[in-house]
Length: 117
Image (cartoon, rainbow, N blue to C red; front, side, top):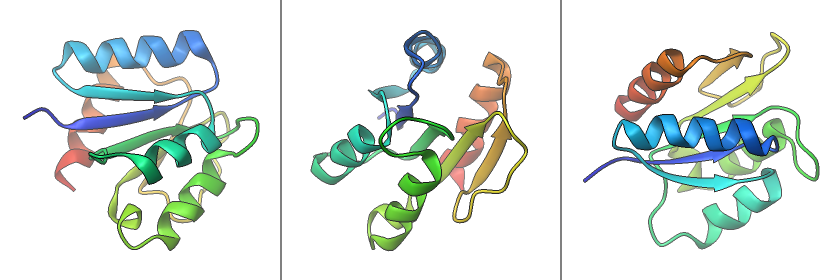
C-alpha cells in the first residue's frame, strides 16, 4: 500500500504541482489549502497520513501552529512534519524545515526520508 501524504499549501498552483509530483511517485496525496483545513482533515481522517508537508505562512492557521497542535495530540504528534518556508527560521516541533523553493527531486527525497523516520 502506498504511503499517504498531506500537503498543506495556500498557493493552489504550488500545492497541485507538489501533489502531482508525489502522485507520480505512487503516493496517495491529500490536500489542504491552509492549516485549519488540514487540522480538520487530520482530526476526522479514517486513514492518517504518514507525512505532512506544510507551508509556513498561511491564512487562518500557519504551519507552526499546525505543528504545535499536532504535537499536543497523542496520535497526530507521531506524524513527521516538514515545514516549507520562505525564511530559514526554525519551527518548534517540526521534523524538518525546508527553505523555499523546493524542487521536485528534493520533495521526493524529503517525503521518502520522512516516511522511514
